[in-house]
Length: 173
Image (cartoon, rainbow, N blue to C red; front, side, top):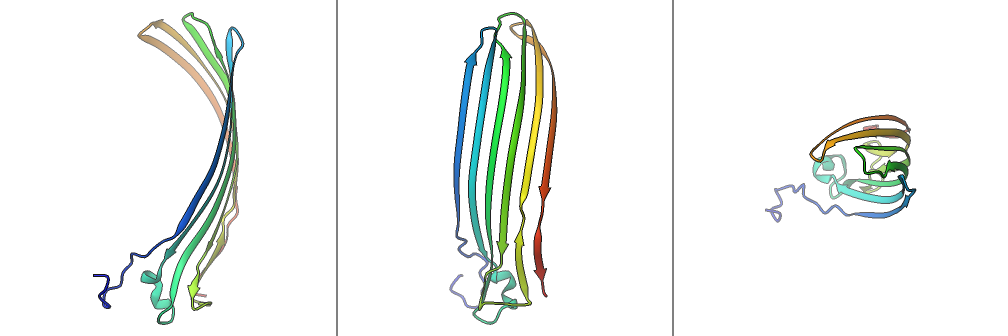
């Protein structure tokens, strides 16, 4: 019963927000014997969350105080793919292509508390930026023995480089 003063409720309102902007442009061009496809994408996302942790860590703050966890994250991702595929009607078909991604994210975490500050008890103040660049090249050849049976052989090379820097977590200073 949430009205019983002897019951500690861990269920609290947790406000937050999530806003995304997504863009994609696809160009498809018939070259005669082959088809050229280009797909360009972009995403920008802002995500914010907050949680009331008083039910878990309330013993760390003065009576009537609160403690929480807030997180703000931003993602930005750009992708590009080029693909050339056969356009013939014979038993052989093929596709070759390249793909690229450039992404970055940044997260900031804090512990809002009342009364402010709850110094030396639970200080979580952290950032966590991640940068990511990846690319791939690929190819595939397919032979159709008949309308029901076909065999494919493909290859893909993929490279992904990520850097992450984090800072600042302190419990019980």
